[in-house]
Image (tube, rainbow, N blue to C red; front, side, top):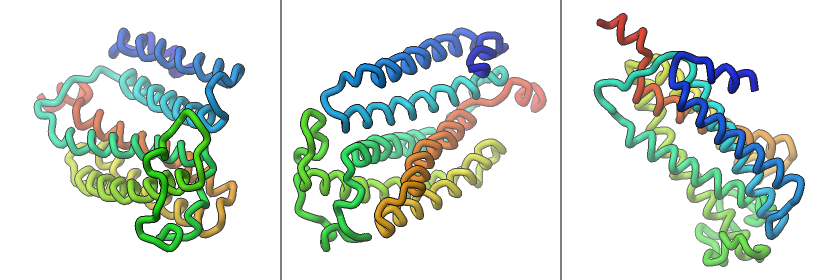
Length: 238
């Protein structure tokens, strides 16, 4: 709360910070109302939306924090922005799918790792895997779980690529963020495997869910610092 209030008096992007703070307040209010009235169609959908709103609150607060630290100007060339943008999109899709999996208690439906129900592509109800209007059948839960695993491979490839490019960057903040991505990615993969092998221990579920959200922060930082630089740094170079 203190960080958000001080953003109004920062020397950089006051209007932008104020707008984002109002958006953040609106989302927090929506989440509070959702918690009080439980107005959605099912408990699974309520849990799903709660998780995504919590993640969105964190991402917006992080954006406000970065923008309000100093005066930022765009760099002369917008290099590698497409790569980090794709990685953010892929991770965002995985967060959504993972939240839906957790909300429907589909963590153990595959019964093993790396194959699911003894198959590399299990027969499942993929058509209704994302049906938010009714409870999922066992077959639909299998589909959700398997799609989450398949997408995790895409996430691993894209984030590894981002990490390799970022740690070789000439921008210090980007290099640090790339190193953080590497560490968090390893923790997340290990937690995902342990979840299945040890039948969803509570502490691993918590780690897996939290790291999934936190993993987005260094990606947002990489995109921001690749696109912008501090005005004082630009003055120093001149």
